[in-house]
Image (cartoon, rainbow, N blue to C red; front, side, top):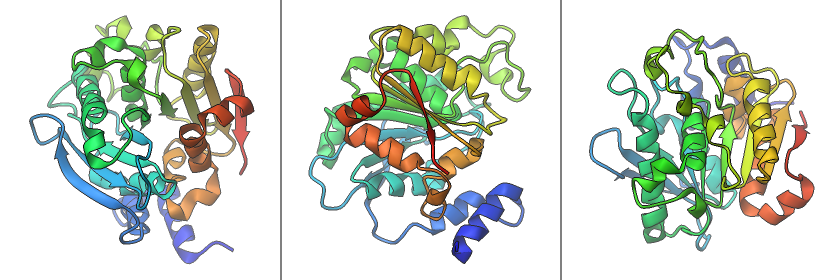
Amino acid sequence: MRSALELAVLACVLVLALAACSPLTVLNGAVPDHASRIVPDVAYGEGGRRLLDIYAPPGVDKPPVVVFFYGGSWRNGSRADYKFVGDALASRGIMAVIADYRLYPAVSYPDFVEDSARAVAWTLQHIAEYGGDPARVYVAGHSAGGYNAAMVALDARWLARFGASPAMLRGWIGMAGPYDFLPIVARDVKPVFHFPGTPPDSQPIAHVSAAAPPTLLMAGLDDTTVDPHRNAEALAAALQAAHVPVTLVLYDRLGHAMLAGALARPLRWRAPVLDDLAAFVLHPSQQADRAPPGLARQGAQ
């Protein structure tokens, strides 16, 4: 029997009644007070969009760190809306860094990739000052944020601008990210990437090499926003061919938004997204044993 809060959140997300109910507000409202130690408004560069919040798990010495980028078609989003993600990671003993980045129309490709790389480099260089383990830093993202994470992890040019390298990452996690989307079909995305003049090297799949960090790719099979077969499955196959350790997890009856929503306390029953993410970060050797490179696992519902 689901609680009234769980049912309210699920109904809110499914009908997208944004005028009367904000799903993100409801999910964030379910975060208990003092569940983690939050360090807000940390600047990783100049400007109001180059800020991040740190969620530290209580009582954990030198926890691994996940830098998370949210989605929103590179047009909208705020780190404050993703408190539930910071809470989810901290609840498993993982330090979360939730970063903003500049958005269209103020900027366009590749500026938000540069911001993401700057935030990850800042984390590698400074997270020890906040108690995190700089030797266990992961980059993750959902949807457009998954694209940002992929570019930072796979295209070494971006971190190199800030004195860092993908080799310094312990791994990366892509959640329903677009990794191969030319020609661009979505009307609101075309100007973001200067279509039809979009450079081919804007696609994460173009940067697959044996130097890529260990990878966890997650997608819902009911995703009608970002095709899981063209994107997650194809990128997993390319990484496997390059002999990169990669795990692909596909979830039955899970759509685009719910892949991220399932991290929130009221919705974790929908799919073991948090379990799979935490296992990848906390137990990388066990994860390799459970899921050899390229193995697709369907999450239980």
